[in-house]
Structures are given as C-alpha cells and as structure tokens.
Image (tube, rainbow, N blue to C red; front, top):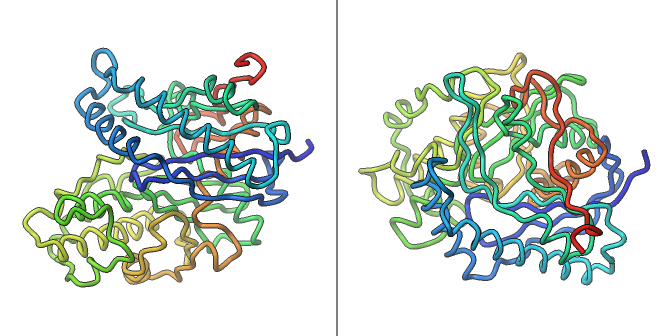
Amino acid sequence: MQPAWAIGLMTGTVLDGFIDIAMIKTDGETIDAFGPWELAPYPTDIRSLLRETFQAALQWRFSGPEPEIFREAEIALTRAQSEAVNRFLAKHGYQAADIAAVGFHGQTVLHAAPENGHRGRTRQLGDGAMMASIVGTDVVYDFRSADMEAGGQGAPLSAIYHKAMLRKIGARNDTAILNLGGVANITWCDGDEMMAFDTGPANAPVNDWVSAHSGADMDVDGRIAAAGSVDEDRLKSLLEHPYLSAAFPKSLDRFDFLASMADGLGLEDGAATLTAFTAGSVGKGLDLLPKRPTRIIVCGGGRKNPTMMREMAKRTGCEILLAEDVGLRGDAVEAECFAFLAIRSMRQMPYSYPLTTGVKAPQTGGKLASHVAAG
C-alpha cells in the first residue's frame, strides 16, 4: 500500500478552546512522514455552546430523545472545524485533492462503558457529510460506534497509532506512551501485542476545580497546585477507587471522576490533590501490566503542567519523558492518530483489539463520507 497524506482532527473534553489539526503521510501501518500541525482556536461562542451541550448530555444520559442542542452544536462545530481545515490547507500550501481523507473525531459529549453485560454507548457530535462538502475531500468519522456495537469499550482507540510511534522511535517494552487529555490513557507494547486502557482522569477534574473556584480555565503551568499541599490521606482513599485496580480493557467518560473529589479543600490544596491523583492513578495502572514500564513518554496537554509531571515521576517511579524529548509532537498526537485511523478505516484495517477495547476479535470501524456524494 502506498502512503497517503491525511489530516486528523481532535477536540478534547477539557474544552481548551482549540481544534487540534495534524497531517501525516501513512499507509495505516507506519508513519512515513509528519506534515504540518497546529492548534486552531475555536470561535469563543462555540465553547459556551459546548458547555451547555455537555450539561444537556449529562441530563440525557442516553435516555429518551436527544437534546435539541446536540444538532445545533453539531452544525456549529462541524462548520468551524471544516473552515479550520480549509485555512490550514491554504496556509501550508496544500489543496483538498492532495489529501486522501480527513479523520474527523468529532466532539464527545457522552460515553458510557459496557456494564453488567450491557453494551456501552457513545455519542460524538460531528457531521461527516457536511465536512466532506465544505472541505472537498473524503471524511472518515464516527470512529467509536462500531467497536461498541461489537461489545468493546469504544476507547482507547489510540493504541495502534501509539504502536507506530513507538516503532518510529525504536522503543522497547520498557517504554509506555501516556496521553493526558481530559482522561488519561496508556499504551504498552510487547512485540506485536498491544495493551491499552484509560488509567483514570487527567486534566478534567483539575481544570473544573480551578474554574469553579477561581474562574480561570485551567491551572496554567501547574502554578496553583504547586502553591498547595497534597492531602495524602484523601489521596490514599481516592486511589482505592475500584476502577483503578479493575482489569483492563476499561474506559472512562470525562465525568466519571469529578472535581468534587477535592470538596472541602482550598483552591491550592484541592488542585494539588487532584493533580497528584492523576499521577497516582497512572501508577496504579502500570501495576496492571504484565511488565511494569520504567519509562513513560507523555503526550497531550497535561505534559505542559510541570507540577503534574513532577507528581508523575514521584507517584510512578518512572523516568518521565515529554514527547518532544524523543522527536514526537505532544500536542499533535491525538489529531495524528485520527489521520492514521482514517487511512486504516478506508483500507478496512482493524484499529480496536481484545486487549485495547475488549472486542472479541480485531475490529475496524468509522463511517466514510465521500466528497463526491456530499458535493
């Protein structure tokens, strides 16, 4: 198979106000080349619309008809992301015809893992046909539904791309890749075997805590947490949560661990405790692997929080490396992943597996919106 250029899009559940856009050249197995990438700002009114949509999703919880705001948000975010792709292509000297596909993850508003024999459910907002029409290239979207319909967790889907990353840098089985978005997920490979799961929360509870108690969007550079002290007794209790010791595959919704874990603490101590909880959760997750890694390569927004990285080293006992330390692009990984998965989907290659999402057999997925049909 000849490598092709693809664009991936990702907007996380932390609502940081940016659309992650990244371009890679791939055959769906290896990373042939890294193209441009950037964080494109969302229009400010979309952030407030998405916050309202999240609240509606929490009220809905897959019961009854979907809230009307879902469609309003879907149209707005699809248009915003499509226009961002067009600006990205023009800025970097490409045309839509140069791109085999856009991998459009969409915005997760609710995710419920399988439980007690019942299949899980997930909802990502994103209109692939609308994007194909606006951008003028094929769009692959709705990456998670097929996995969940097959009994999987629907997450994490990044393992096969993380495997390609580890191969690209020549890493061995002493190294894992950790992504810190709203939720934290880890991937570990031993030869061809991949294991991946959500370890616990990442930035979401800390951001929500800081937002509720100070009005700021996030704990920039971990300064608020650095000014506080970890409530070690509370942390010990939090780390006894049954999810953390449960066998994988397993996945989380952004709202499964809430900022209320720190209720009763002051702003700084609450931020410090929630930050330490993210790191401690990763440590618990490493204990579940057949071989405990000694190095962790960290991607995602959480790696920019020095306090979180110090806690990560302390609570895991591992050498902590930022993606950039090994020649990777920490802000671009999630978007790169969906470019990679778009090509795999178009070529009917699997991207979820028994030891990553819990499906019984390797499973492909995604829906294809052809720009020809859309046009």
